Length: 523
Image (cartoon, rainbow, N blue to C red; front, side, top):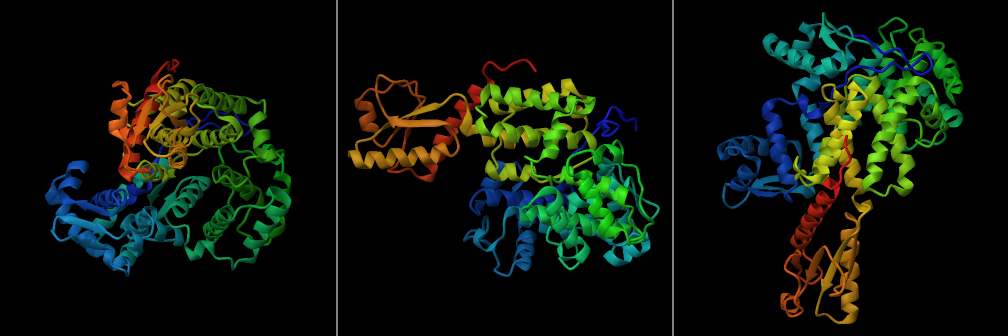
């Protein structure tokens, strides 16, 4: 693959392609369909009828009946409190969410139980594996194994990796990148990778905090621990590694803030391990630390990288500024500007430098949006795709297979986060017949709940003011004062039921959609 050699000093090369792998890609087709049914139940409070599920998911009711019969038994065998059962009619499904972990945990459990994941894990822990030993370990026929390996190779190609000749072939930094993502996303509690029994690993984490990063959050320390266990397993039966690190150059990285101290830690702690090349491992750890966000976003390292005047940093800065300028046109970023800028710097740099990604962001988006996505014609999606089009005009890296999917995920989460910061504030007029004190509590209660999701002001209705939505507890009162018919009128029960707020959010979402699609700049 031809690489752009204009890097960080002599360093970071821009990769010409990237791809996104959803963790669910590891599931067989049937289990993935099972997961769709589980997701539906999670976002419908654990209760659904077969008829409604078939209508919403656009599948044959007989398919649902077939899957749910087996899936129910599987869930009840996996979880001791028997969370799944049928309602009084056989066409009603009930999932006891109180006795289940999160949707993400259930998804990961199904993945870990699948053949694809087990093949990858076996290969990781057995560097000298053979297809025969793999077949014997997983109790599957040779034809079944080769079918799974063929499908895995299609996924691994996104990472420039392949299972061939009884080895996982590819660049070492890409192998580690893949396995770190796999374990972090699907099985971040594996005792073999998270135990604190290795004194060198624990000393490395301590010294890294004392000399380079400062105190790290618990999950970041765990990420470093997983990576170091992964490293020691990778070098256990190999000669000292000195593999290609692409555009990452030792001399350039050592000049960055804190990096000389980090390399000194490698030399001090791992010199006696004949399988470790401290210089290569120092560069490899820098690569890992970048995509795993080990260094705090406000660290001098990121500021230095962002402000460097070499072609690479200048190019990445132009990408980040393009995103930030477009976000700023519709949202008041305020104190979040600096943090968002550095987040996009690390995300866009990782996309440009390393092949492939295993993401669970889509599942977070699914949960946040309760399984109801913005339609392609919505202002939210038009705005998101306008930002992506701007990036694609600046670099072909963002048009590569999978790149757009990842950008849609990241920008969807960003827009969800920023909905409360639209530059336009939406006004809600409240019409009630309650006394002054009750009116105060009602107005404040509605305002606080809705303001957690949108930039709104809630005030008592005044005929001389302009509003976007009218909320009333009395339709008779609304008719009496002669409200304009061209405004959405929502009747709310007392302090508001769940369905009342769903309707209110629907109207607000439509207002945001219209706001975001209005006066969009050219990409």
